[in-house]
Image (cartoon, rainbow, N blue to C red; front, side, top):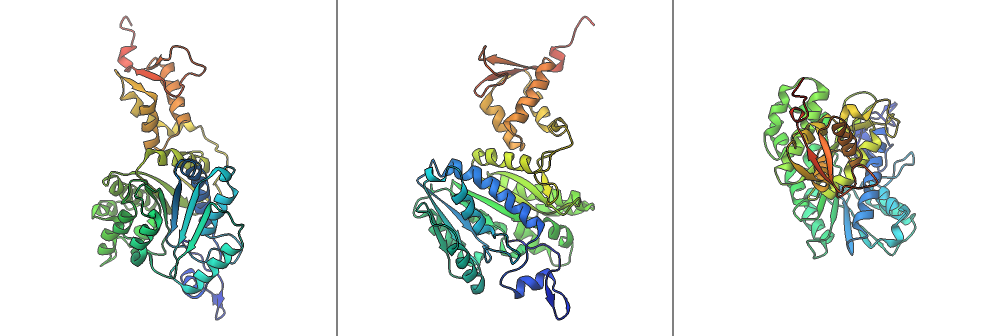
Amino acid sequence: MTLGVRSMGIRGGRAMRRVEELRERTVWKSDPHTQVKHLVYRHYLQCWMAKILQKFPEATIVDGFAGPGVYNDGPPGSSIVVAKTFLEHSAHRRFNRLNLICLEERPDRVDELQRQFALLPRSPQLNISVQPPGTFAEEQRRLSVLAHRGRRETPVLWLIDPFDLKSAPFSLIRQCLATPRSEVLFTLFTNELHRFCQRDGFDKTMTAYFGGDHWRDVTNERRAGVRKEAFSTAYQQGLRDEGLFTGSFGIKISNQSARYHLILATHSEAGLKCWAPVTWKLDTYSGQGASADTADAPSLFDAASVVDRLDLALRAHAGTEQRWETLSSEAARLNHMDKHLRQVLDNLAAQGLAFRVDPVRARTAWPAGCTVRFYAPEDVADEAS
């Protein structure tokens, strides 16, 4: 349950700062950025649950920084969001077992979390386990054993939303991803990284957070927004170096640069297939980030302006034939959906640079399973001109 930076509450006749509220209160007020983050959770979980819980006999979600499960102005916390997404899912009666494991450090918040779960309807397919108070760093290995229930192939989704940089170093994220069907949704504190990266003595914290010193190149960039995005890119590169697929989504404060980023890390491209629709639903212009006042807002722009990377990638296939599955996978890695792929193929076909060669007849231009041949511009140039 990540905190924002606004001051909330009254203490001694003055507004209580957010950090004080976290330290002193069991439950605190929500902020709009957390609501956008939870909207991302809901959309991703809708897809993840539909795919995983109808395929595998059981799966686990671990909320490693669960908090009290509610904000004092009413919205649910992350663990309750997970449970309600399961219970309210249109397909949940067809779901197999979901184990929801929740860890929170403070005893008073553990008690409140249990009270919040007690208010929810019961489901035989949903097994909720609120752990005794403990820190994620100390409990991660034990939680992993609980999550997998003796089977490495059990899908496990970790929600890692710490309160500070030191609570979730890269080594812990790597441990969460140690099994082949594990995924992580991680809150990356890009605003704090931007503010503190050049502070004396902070380099050790940064290196532990990134799992290496590749973050140092980013500090040469002075512009806040660009530097934050570069930190997100650097963190994702560390995950890719581990052989993982990854995506990113910025949570913004109004029209300012991102306050933090949500990072997805997964062993399977299927995770990206769930991730891309979420990001494009919440940010219909670029699929890269949303603020509290833009999430789910209609776009005023033509999406064609943000598919340039995909266009370039497809043009690089000139002189080859490619199966739809390969092209769809490539689009997913660039955080695009199949509708964007078809859009770019339409544009290339209009220029004579892409042709469907199989099947010969189809109800749509680019059906799943088709084969596409690509050409270079010089191949279609009029030599007589």
